Image 1 (tube, rainbow, N blue to C red):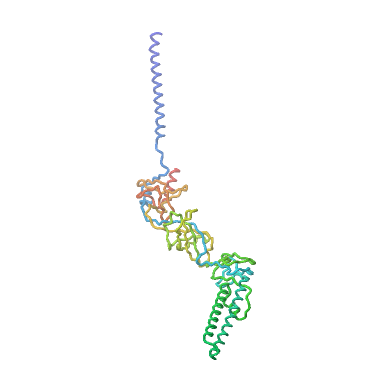
Image 2: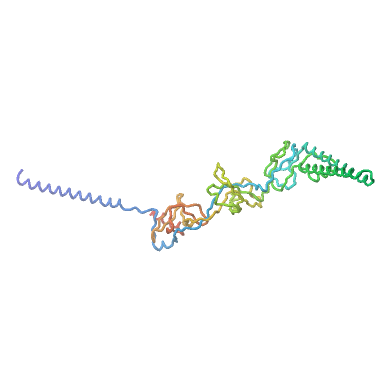
Length: 390
């Protein structure tokens, strides 16, 4: 290698190294903007930024503790008022020969519901006639004894004996008459028996109070026994609403407390009533406490076995709450807008309880004193969505 070649090769090597170094710096410089761009913060989609003028259009207040009435909704059903319900049956054993009332019929006190033929009725009427005959005979005997005493034919002791026999006969007659009334014969029928001696072939089963027949358990030809409930008649102008209260809430209600009753069959018409009974025992299978509410039913619109819902307003408790207008419902979740500064707001998820009037009690997700939007939340959420799309 000559002297001219050596300096030339040295220069070419230097140019090559310089070029490689420049290429490496340019590649590193090209990567740096991409890295910086990747690490740039992403805008929070739950936040919305407004101009100061627009931010002043939304009303902001601090979340505060307030008195909240504990409200409970309890499923229930309509039942006849047991205090106004009568179960009617036969007083003697006999065969039903005629049924005169059906379920749903309105009946009056004393109205005949069915007729019964019974050997006991016949025997009771014969016993009455015998007692009546004995009484009349004893009365004539006393009259004769009085005349004989006056004529000094018999002594006064004999007259007293016959008067005692008359008293016994009259007592037996009253007992026989009472037995006929217990069987079901009316006073008019007993008077006819006394005057004519004609035995009634049937005994009526009558309504003991006015009301509506809500149950019939008898058919023609059936043999009825004393104590069998054949008809149930109820006065439905006043009914019960039966509910089952969870055992943990049993102490939140009391007798005579006013409640609201919602019956779906009445198309949302609200009724009011009062609690007349709170059980002292817990149902072991459902872990609930039975309660009863009494409701007036002047138009007879409420019918037994209708479904109903009881709204119970219990005692007041201090609890964090927000206005219902401040709540935004989205994707089956509840949110409120929390103010971060004068013009920044963030949509924050909260867990709320059922509404208590115009307030929604807060279970979690919000602290007392936090500034929230209480008026205009819907429009603010629309502004947030528009900014997110842009």
